[in-house]
Image 1 (cartoon, rainbow, N blue to C red):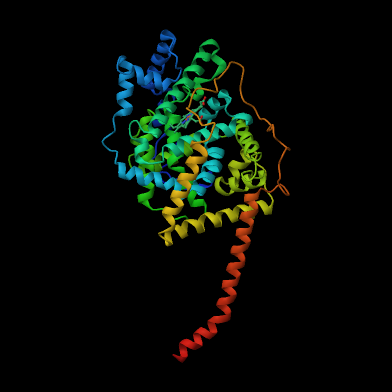
Image 2 (image 1 turned 90 degrees about the vertical axis):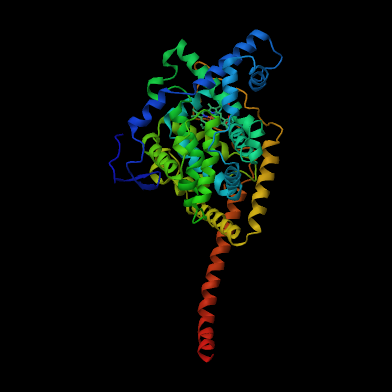
Length: 454
Ligand code: HEM
């Protein structure tokens, strides 16, 4: 698609904005498709060589890096880079930004799943082509992979200490950077054997700089403009937005991704919008990823399981019908749509209560911070971000039915427990609103006459 004209109004995924001279042109971002994290790749190569030569007991890439960074110049450079804190980092700001994730945890998680993953990730051609080759997107593995991503997100939002050099979130991020290098190395290795294994001309180098800037933007910009604003009117201010983006600017730095695109809120917003225009394109692979995601979340154990109608209703609410039709999502019935409206009411009312009742906010933040840490980071199967889903020649994830389909599901009328609660919330709010209006009509004349008498 050609670049839009300055002043042109554009709508992508149900989001409308005006193209300006500050947006990124296709020509500006295109070269990034053939660029990647060279230092991370060189460090991984060294680590692999050390692993082979020394017959070390450990196969853990981070451990090898820590042991050998003093003796190897490439590893020293990599180690120094990830342990040098850029001048622009303000730890107090990052700590505030980390809190944002937990303040609106429910809206953030649902937004990430339905917009960040279902729409933007599925529709980013270069990203999905890599993902279906790692096998982590088969329905058997997908839940595990999503939990791994959340594990990282929770580790990097625990506290400022966790992302300072040597902290838990910092180490996790360095591991993820090396994991990305492993994926790239493996896909390129297979390409050498069979050039048609992965089309680097069209999709670029696997895990390239363009896709990485896009992914950082999806993590930190999408909640601000594409996700939370669609849930009614969750109170967001520029300070909160700037703080959260600053967290991901720093994480992008640790991941070897250019950070200038996230220097200010304005730049970050333009970056997100530019990528919406240039990179959101559904393909057959997008439909596969969306289909498998749906299979995965609709077959979760109760009380986490949701119906495909609810996911489709939420996705259509956030992303608009055009994209969801392209992803072949169903057109859900009224009950599912109402249930999602109940969720929106819940998320908005909770957010406003946190704003109006100051004592509630730290309680909610602390509740989600500790519960998610215990439930996800401390789970038995927590990951060290090892290279598990190794791409293999001839193996590519296609649409798959979930193995647990039809077994052990206690869903009544194909509606999950959470959905029933949201329907209840909606019903309660409607009754409350009707009661308030009736009360107003009933008592206003009395109040007016009281006022006149006074
Ligand atoms: C720069 C922003 C990015 C962030 C913050 C990020 C985050 C993560 C995290 C936390 C993991 C480990 C957990 C998991 O397996 O899901 C991971 C793994 C992975 N990422 Fe990324 N990612 C980014 C960019 C990308 C891009 C651009 C691609 C391109 C396709 C990509 C492809 C992958 C793959 C294939 C894995 C799984 C490797 C495996 O477990 O075998 N990532 N990423």
